[in-house]
Image 1 (cartoon, one colour):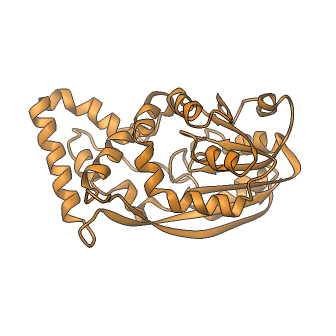
Image 2 (cartoon, helix red, strand yellow):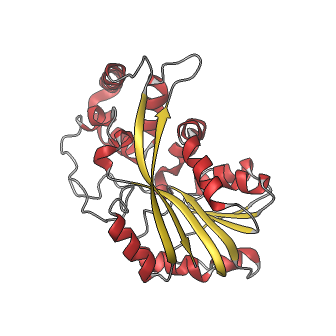
Image 3 (cartoon, rainbow, N blue to C red):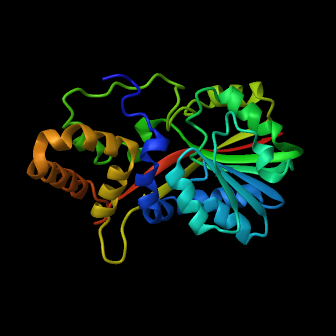
Length: 280
């Protein structure tokens, strides 16, 4: 299977993420708090890959003027409903005229929660974002470190992928995708080449806990797996072949694997990210 066979396609698969935004917000709450603290949300804020509006909501609650862009119409629809005080648009931050979203006003703060790793040309993208920033603007975002140390990419997912006739190969290092910026040297080079300075990368670790007061988190983790582009694409490829009974059996095997990996009776795992800050 080609390297990009399970690569996220947010235009097609964003609806799955939007449908489970409550779970994503819960497991990524430490990430959201870290970005908000580091970014000092004020003035005009641009959220790149804004998703369903988590950071936008925090920005407007802090008194900022917030604008969000995302390439997923489903995500933008959800953000519009969630944060009516923000301005949102379906747009690709690599190529869009971002200042046009604010009547040609520049942005004081640029933020992103796992939304900047998918650009086809990251240097062009970060250059375009910098052009929309004020001279003393700051940029703060979170991105994943190596997928091999982040169970969010493998926990339960391996059982699902095993049902594929042809297994996906590992993407080339630095290629667009969730772990495109795992190599800190590669990321520093991209930001330097696109005109950003004073770049810092801080190791940020957090625990994602899928449990609720009434659940051990197995079904919540399964919902997340099926919401991701990987889960949706596997379902597209194997559900018809397996039939409904076979698909149900496969999901039961995923649940069983998740139960086997519970920690203190709940589904939870540690994660490692880069908390990135830079200046225009």
